[in-house]
Amino acid sequence: MAIKLSEKQLKLLIFALENRVIELNQIINPLLDELADHKQFLEQYKLTQSPNRPNHQSFELLPWSKKIIQVLQETGYPMSANEIAAEIIRRVPLLTEEPSTRSSIASILSRRTGKLFKKIDDKYSLM
Image (cartoon, rainbow, N blue to C red; front, top):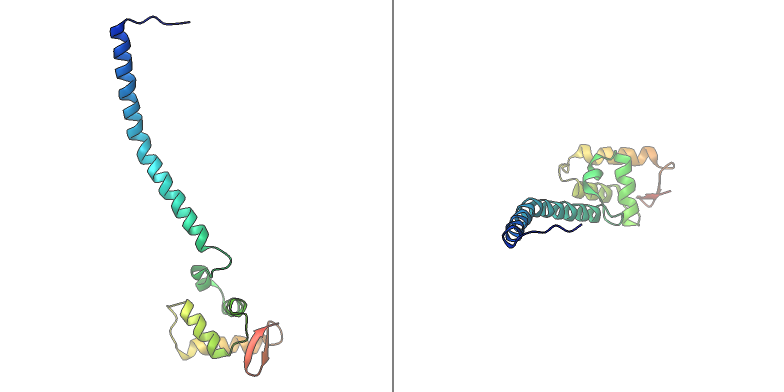
């Protein structure tokens, strides 16, 4: 069913629809910009969570033994207790090179040698 409009009615309808399109664009464009920002953030977040790249935020929360395991897995070669401690301190800036940090790491290595770690020539690696 067709609607018959006069020329004046048609011009008013077109003017009203054009104004409505402008209003809707003013509402939608900021939302589309926000959506694009969120998508960009998620893509960057996914890249930082890649399995090939260490996740420093979650690394800080790991217990000592898991930190040591992750360091040894990612380096791929045996390391001394001091090298392991230096790497953990490098990854967790809040830790300082205190004797307690190194002694905690050395304690875990000595208690877990034979279970999680093996020691050859004063260097530790994974079992």
